[in-house]
Each structure stands twice: as structure tokens, then as C-alpha cells.
Image 1 (cartoon, helix red, strand yellow):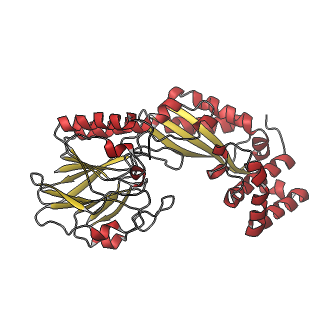
Image 2: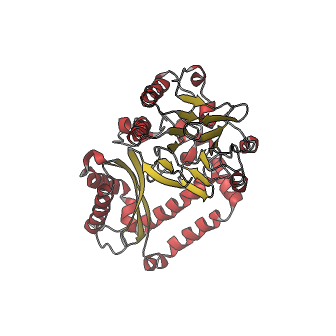
Amino acid sequence: MRFLHAADIHLDSPLQGLERYPGAPLEALRGATRRAFVNLVELALAESVDLLLLAGDLYDGDWKDYNTGLFFIAQIQRLHAAGIPVCLIAGNHDAASQITRTLRLPDNVHVFATERPETRRFETLGVAVHGQGFATRAVTTDLSRAYPPPLPGLFNIGLLHTSLDGRPGHAPYAPCRLEALRSHGYDYWALGHVHAREVLAESPWIVFPGNLQGRHIRECGAKGATLVEVDASGRVCLTPHALDVVRWHLLSVEIEGCSDLDAVHARIGRALERLVDQSEGRLLAVRLALSGATALDAWLRAEHEQLVNDCRGLASVHGDRLWLEQVRLQTRPQTRAVEADETLGGLLAAIETLELDPEALARLAEGFEPLAARLPAGLRRGEDDPTDPAVLRACLDDVRALLRARLLESDPR
């Protein structure tokens, strides 16, 4: 018996804010979730799986028309034609969708109830799938506690959308304890909600497959689904399959020891080339970070726009296989230069004092409120919100670096 376990598809996720980046491949990025889902369906067909499990967040909240749902139905019809059933639970993003409640799905799809757990038997496969979807966007109770006991003689699968005991960057929805899942008596827990792949236990198997397609720089690396094979003795074998069509990557390049810009460019060019060689034909969305103590630090910061243009030129060699999202500087000046400048030392000490005083940082954030009120909505949230003390705290490193650049400026050309 073989089944595919996937979660967090987020079909047609809007990927907001891309317009801020010049040259961003908008069409490729915004179509990535659909193309990744096509890859999932094609994998199911190629592997002749017996069952497809979708552990929540198929959609990305409410949508304005039926196009997303019609796309999903068209792909699921391909599985229906091949006799592959689909088990689906609603996650927190699915619960926000109004249109999905009236969408007629093919007969091979079983959507689990949201009021209480239910069980779907597949007698010919020797499988029982137990699951419950989200009735509302924010489910804060432990749904797993009400899941029924395992059915004797069958391979029991628990389908659950959960934050488990908490994961960074994920809302604490349907929380539960790992030990409670382990002791429930099921053979496999097919989890969703957490976007990083994790195998939490092997006896029984408790697995987050991760999301199907990375959508931003915080979702780096390979994304896809997990193929599960169960032999006649009940032994389970897991194989992750990368299905993403755009891969986000944080590329750190150490430039310590580079004496001029030509050396920096050469090092960046080699790093990008290695990355493209490993991409297996996928579009790479790369955030480049330069690091290390260097005599070029001041110039790089003073001429950051020129640096970005140079890096985009290096990336353009690879055509539409690579998009450079951002270039960030994590370099620092060589220690002797900093120690020799008393003015710079005093300013850096003042910044360090501000870092250690949360109340002062909060007052500074309040001072930006009149400015924030005049900014576009997209610049008033997340990592761009000037009224968030945490954002300002993160900016202090850039302020420190800018001061070094201005006071220790030199030209490496």
C-alpha cells in the first residue's frame, strides 16, 4: 500500500509585496503554487499511489472567484480517472473560504467533518483514515483528544492540522502533545500547518511534510510531499519528493580576504554558479548576504545601490533560472579601523546603550507614528513597520554599519 502525504498547498497565495522588487518574475512566482500542485498530481499518477492525503490549508483564505477551486477540481479529476481517492481536511486558511463550501468536488474526494472527528475506511487497502477539519480560522482546542481509537486489523492514519506543541512562525492552532499522539495507537500521523518538513517520531510515524511550494525567503529550501510505502508486514518506508518549481535560497558569501571589488564579484559569481548547478532546472529566488571583516565594508555600504546592480548583473548571466531578490550586507570593518576612530567609537557605544534600553526603543518607535500614518499600507506592517520596536531594534545593526561606512569611507576601485 502506498500513499502520498502533502499539506499547506496555499493555492494562488497572493505573494504580496513583490512589486517592490525590480525585475521580479511576477508571473512565475504567482503561478508557482499551481504548478507545484500539478507536480503533486503527476507524482501520484506516476507512482500509482493508492491514496492522497491533504492535511489542511489547500487554499489561502477567501478568494474572489471560482478560478482557484476550478483549477483544483480539474487536477483532482485526473486522480479520479485513475481511481485514486483523496482525503482532505480543512486547515485554518481553508476555514476562511466561503466559496469552497458550495464547491462540488469529484466523488473521489472525502472532506472530513469539522464538528467532530470521523473515520473513512478503505477496506481493500486495509486502511482507516481518521480526521477532523477546522470549523473556524482559529481553533485553539486539542482536536486530537476526540479522535477515535484505532480500528483493529487496519493501518490507522490520523489526519490532523496542528501546531503540535508550538512552532516558531506558526499560530498555535489545534495544539497537542507529541506524546499524546504517540500513545493514541495509530500507525501514522499525517500532520499539516508547519511549513518545514519534520519527522517527529518513527514509532509511530508522526510527520509534517512541509508546504508544497515556498512562498518567500522565510520558506527556503526544498519543498514537496512525502511518499509512504507500507509492506505486507506493516513496515513503513518514507521518501520525501521535492515538487517545488521556485526555490527560495539564502546565500551567504564570505568576502573576508577580498582586496578589491573584482575579487568580491568573482566570489559571488562562483557561489551563484554552484547554486544554479544544483537547482535541477528550478527557478531560484535568492537573497544574497555578504559577510566577513573587510577593508571594503565602508565602501560597500556607501555604494550599496552600485553593489546591488553589480550583483544583479552577475545573476543575469543565468537568465531566467535565477532571480536575485535582495542583497544584504553583514560585513564589518576590520577591527583596527574602528578602534582608531574615537568619534565612531562613541556613536557605537550610544547605539549599544539604546539596544539595552527597551523603554527608550519604545519611545523612539512612538516618534515614528506620524510618519507611519503617511506611508502606504504595505510599508506599515511586518519587517517594514517603523512603529514596531522590534523592527527598529533590527535596524540598529544597519545604522551601526552606515556610521562605519560614512566615517571610514574609502574607495576600492
